[in-house]
Image 1 (cartoon, one colour):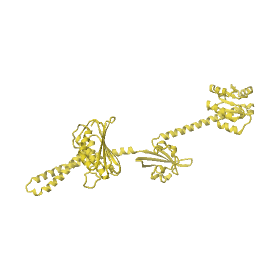
Image 2 (tube, one colour):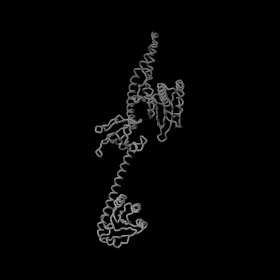
Image 3 (cartoon, helix red, strand yellow):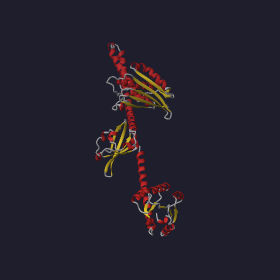
Image 4 (cartoon, one colour):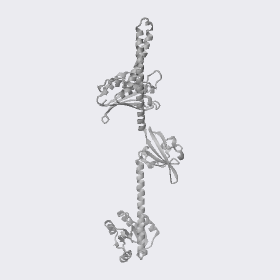
Length: 481
């Protein structure tokens, strides 16, 4: 800003009578300057509202309270307007108060009315420019801080910063929301009191790992960290990303590939065993019909029983591997579930297990009713065994159906209050011949057969479990199958 750019000046005083002197002093500047003189505060404020002025001079005695009122009124109208006070004698208390309130300068009447007005004027303009620059820098800093906080709070990851004493320096809203708090409420809190991770019990900033994984409130988090210095102090910034669903998807894809390989292997094994098994059954039947073998009939029957059991295992393997042809037709899944419950109802009632049904209005589907019924029976029996293992006073199995229009998918949920499935074995429950029961009690084909049947219908099975609480199996079947 230069003096030539400032042409409008307004001078206010209740008892001003030297306007000619002031005008002459302004003429010493050598430029065309319009000086507007007012004696009434209301008129001053009205002129500031209507006109475009570059600076205001106020000569109103040494009344601090009155001067502060006028200054605040001017700032309300024009916050950036430079204001210079002209006083009889500079009072330190008055000057400091007015400067603090936003005045550009305080000068004496003697200085103002002398021929050195040019220097006074330049001095005021210089201070005005400095004040404006200071305000501009403050605004830039304020906007920068606001922008940084907005970005920090908008990051989807849970972000927080701690110092070398494990105190939280700052955190973003997603992190604070994890505890139902505002970010300010968590500042200066010890991180280990909020997140009971072993890694936070004792922190060595210089050797802290950059990547690690943790569990919290049933969710999985991938955590990255980085050390930085600020004002000579070391801090660590953390970003926690919820990878629960990603891990589930990764595990699902892994299991899908695994089951495909197992299915192929099962199919091959079944076909290889089937041929010699057919010979065993045939020769055993021939022995039974031969004369002189009557005394060995009991042993031959045992051979046939064992062979028949092997044959059933092979049929189950072929179902799992989707090698056995199915006969599909339009059927009501709700009706199929009702028939299935009738089949297993007596045994469930005998074991004090109640079946609760919540069957929604779902469309008929193109399914192999016999195979799907077998899958549901296997899953109900699995739920029954889990409840008996948990030794519940009263077992509950809930069966629900739902149709989701947008997905065009039919959902069948089977929920039990059994003992749940441990993390160690949940990835193996659909494997053929895997069982958690003692040797000889089960073949371990129930869930694997159910899985094969559902996959044969282009569907899927998912499981959610909590040890000591129960398990939920969800069958998803596409409407167009």
